[in-house]
Length: 278
Image (cartoon, rainbow, N blue to C red; front, top):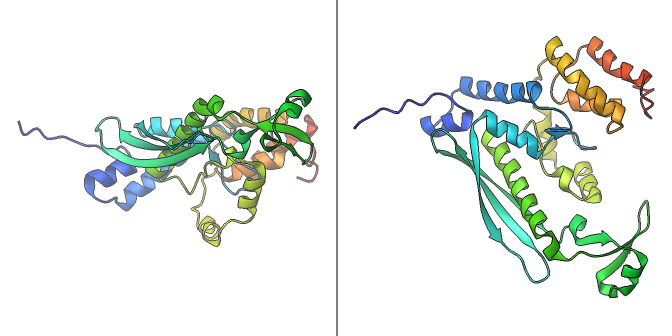
């Protein structure tokens, strides 16, 4: 009746809850595992990516799923419906639970609304634009002039809920795995103008924290060869320039001069602007 439950080390958050504190060795081991998963399993532009103007990769939903699998974290959701007659809005709490023990490791919150700029308006043809009341239409001026009308909120309800779930899961994953110094979140979902403002006018505290980041590991020949194919595809597809790819890599690990030269050599077969000065 008095069976003893043996609990092995399965991740930093679990160790913290089962023992009350974490030893320094456990913290080092936990961080090393996150870095190893990032280098050996996760792929740039699939699981994470650099948003222009930021100093660290943004964690995508696919990356959160990989980290949850590595640390055996199951996710469940609590949804608050904050919608009104004019706006669909959800606030979601994602709960991370250890799959083997059932211990709650942490939570994360996310919110999404049809009032967000990217959901609030949609492009319209002339006939539809002219037939729409003036308070429900606009002409957006920027690089291109676009005629837009208000989106029907109910049409986006499922999309809004999924976005809130996604944001909550990424927040939970970062909280549970303590990888906030390696990844950011949500920047890829923001309106471009707002994102540019935030990345150019970030707080001093975040900048100070960036200066204290631990030294990154050097890429082994095996890891470099494995990722080189992916990096070249990103460059050749035009999704990112060579400097942008190198900037992404620099947040994960350290390249040797020879490895850097191999990546730069992609410019000889791929016509990309801005690569001649690299």
